Image (cartoon, rainbow, N blue to C red; front, side):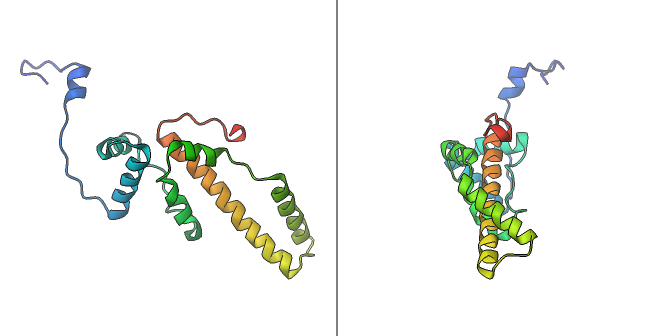
Length: 151
C-alpha cells in the first residue's frame, strides 16, 4: 500500500520481493536443485514455481523398487522427458505378456513362464510409472500435455 492509502498497481506488487529463509529437508532441497539443473533455471525460480503451483510430483509414494528410477527423471531435460513420455511398448512385448496372463488364468504356466511373467509385469509397471512421471514433470514444468492415448 502506498503512503496515501492507495493500493499499488499490479506492477508495483509484482516488483516487490521479500527474502525468506527456509529450512528444507535434504531430499526436498536436492530434488529442487536437480530440477533447477535439468531445466537450466535459477534455484530461486524453481522454488518460486514450486510455491506457486505446488511441488513437482512425488516419486516417494511409488513402490520402493521403482523409486530410484523415478527420482532419476527429476534430473532429465525436457527433450529426454518427452522421449520417455512418448515411448510405447512393442507389440511383441505386449503379445507375450498377454499370452502369459492367459496361461496364468488357465493355471497352465510352467515355473520358467511364471518367472518370465513376473519379470514382464515388473518391467511393464516400471515402464508405465516412468511414462506417467515424465509427463507429470513436463506438466509441472509448464508444458501442455496431450491426452495419454495420443502421447
